[in-house]
Length: 432
Ligand SMILES: CC(C)(COP(=O)(O)OP(=O)(O)OC[C@H]1O[C@@H](n2cnc3c(N)ncnc32)[C@H](O)[C@@H]1OP(=O)(O)O)[C@@H](O)C(=O)NCCC(=O)NCCS
Image 1 (cartoon, rainbow, N blue to C red):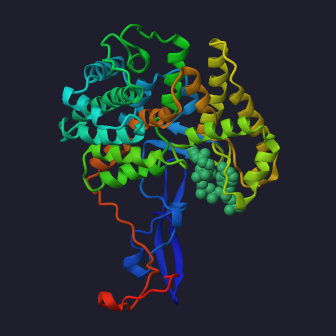
Image 2 (image 1 turned 60 degrees about the vertical axis):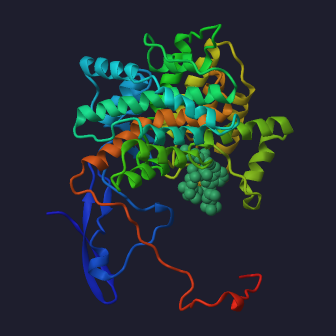
Image 3 (image 1 turned 180 degrees about the vertical axis):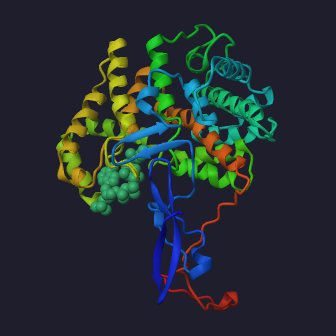
């Protein structure tokens, strides 16, 4: 028999089931709370709310553990390509050789954009933000792609089309922004190499990435593939719960990812480092400003809602950044500065007491800079990487026969007892 939690409320006693996850995570199932008591729970920012049960990704924030489908991220990093990781995240186990070949073939076949889609790029201003373009174009894909998914084979095809075309859209939006012709995908190239080709080839010169660059980008994307119920993934699930199609749901995920407190942090980190370097401000002075709540400044790339320890992805990326820069014989002063900031912050009581550690965005920008990805494309790179996680979460909602539309409640704190009044009688104090 399952354990029950007891709730004493208004002189009455209620029992609520305790749910235990496969990693011994405990939750109180409050789904009958309102019906039983008339009360709802209030949890601004959802810090204590489990919005779903999910079998995709496990995080132990206190220990700094991250697993995709039960496999530690440290085992996946460097061994599985982004494509293999994506299949794992979406379908629940590592692909066989046949699965891998079939999925790679589907990705290659789907890489081209319909010519009418390509014309959309002409409608965006040259300096239009690539995240806005990406979201709009993914949504536009719904008008070109079959959106009915009946079984895993349909899903595999749809996932390949989305992942493949997102890569083509991302490269095309970059080309449009720098006034260069859009480069067609090549059928003889793998996922990451093909993306780099579409980003950096020009009509008179083909770009051939080195194995080190391909490996670093594969790693970057694989480490971003999923991260349980973060802001964008919850957005995808929210949209999916209305039975919206996969393309529309993932397009909403792109918008949620854009903000600087989420995927946009990888841009904010580089901007912060550049600002510190240009101002010549000592790192300790910057850290002092961060600690002063009046300043409104945060140490970007630090802190996480779930991790109260090192984000395991940041450790892997730190090493990968060192390796890539060494192979390219590049010295990036921003990486030195980032390390100096991390050293000062990690030995400062403010950060120690609040358990604030470097997160995935703290070092990832150094890798993207070395590859030549422009700053305004950083969050787009995150979106390409997160696509498998969004698809997998969309699938969980889609496949759930008991699925209900996501519809949180609220505690209303606005005006009460107001009445409509004619226009000429409406006089408000300035403060109103
Ligand atoms: C990620 C983030 C949004 C998580 O927010 P959160 O869970 O609401 O964080 P909390 O409110 O629990 O933070 C706890 C305390 O640490 C402080 N804090 C958190 N992140 C901080 C940071 N990066 N710099 C300075 N202080 C920070 C908060 O102000 C709060 O201080 P208080 O207790 O004195 O009020 C937040 O850490 C942040 O803004 N980080 C920088 C942006 C970033 O790197 N985002 C990418 C995430 S992968």
